[in-house]
Length: 290
Ligand code: ZN
Ligand code: ZN
Image 1 (cartoon, rainbow, N blue to C red):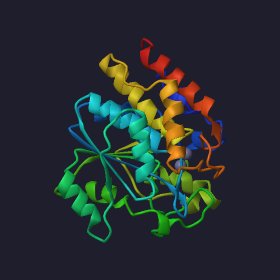
Image 2 (cartoon, rainbow, N blue to C red; image 1 turned 90 degrees about the vertical axis):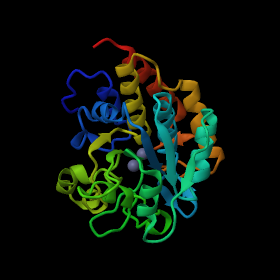
Image 3 (cartoon, helix red, strand yellow; image 1 turned 135 degrees about the vertical axis):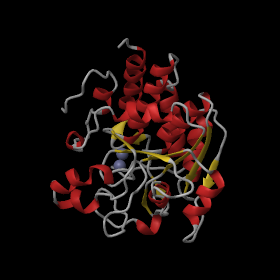
Image 4 (cartoon, protein in one colour; image 1 turned 120 degrees about the vertical axis):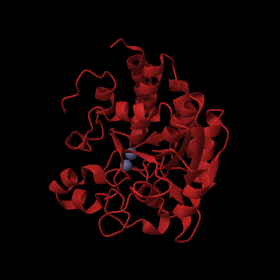
């Protein structure tokens, strides 16, 4: 376990029941810094969706995006979601399960897509939750090292563009991931590369201003929400029952577990009850006195 300071939320995000080895690139204080950056956000564009195989999105990501988007709306932000056609119905199902409006926009085709989205939405903040980030050779890879570029739109281009110092629509960028191949992991790429082998090959080069690492990416998003609630003295997190409904809704809309590849209500190979329990623990940590 890394040194987790006095934050009651970080130790929960650092749990690694799937033995992904996240301790080596865990970001102590990352969720709190992301929450601080998002507290007064005006326009937020969230992206999510890892397409693991032809036409199949995974269950990690959309629940986190929906829960975080709901919290940001409650704090007064305008929230929009951008993803590709495969993940759109899954994300819409997650939002519907939380009673949230469907504000899902499809990422356009063509080389001008990122500019088009940024100029139209003019986000103050960009957030990626479990969304592929290109490796050094420009290819998107899954945890097994397979090239999944054919199935995942280059949405990470939004983050590359929005971080350019002179760019007109510059935005604060936040990335949440659990494996090293997601948007934001460019920030810890040196550490990932040091591990060599598969970890080095899949490591993304796409950086963010605030990186959040967790044992499951959904948990990283929930950790940001727990911090937002803690800072504002109000509860913004969903309930364990919501968690069960949201993940089940994603599976009903076509998602599969990214690890087992089975179409059942599990996330990263962990049963629904593990995720409901983590939501319970985060809810307690969000209310704990400093
Ligand atoms: Zn991942
Ligand atoms: Zn995951």
